Length: 113
Image 1 (spheres, rainbow, N blue to C red):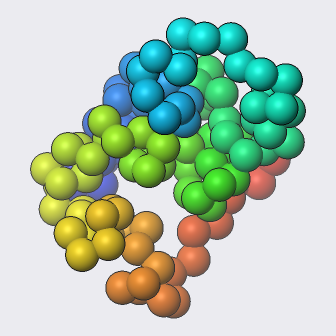
Image 2: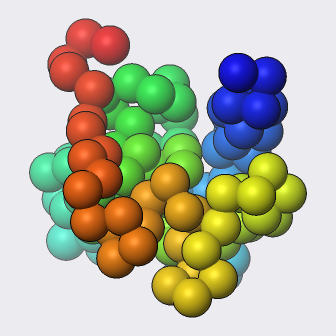
Image 3: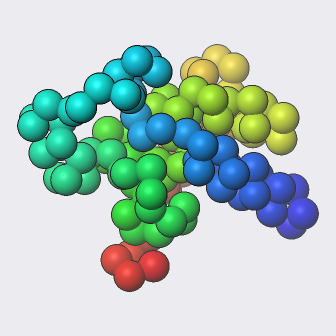
């Protein structure tokens, strides 16, 4: 139980400092084109200001919480590796690896959470 609390705490701290999905740091400083803003509004990616674990904290591109999406936020990888939650074969947290865990269900929290 303490192990899970540590993961949640680390991810919450890292998500506050992590920009929402961007390909490189230079893109984060540039204004987004209208199409990219529209994709975010349609739920593809959560803004960095949402509460981790909420309905709004969702990466529509990868179907995981945005605050835990290592594909969009690679700076989260060390926290997952440090807690032993890493699948080196697929480059994802084991807790998100559907190839290793085909029965895994990652469910978006309901609205209002």
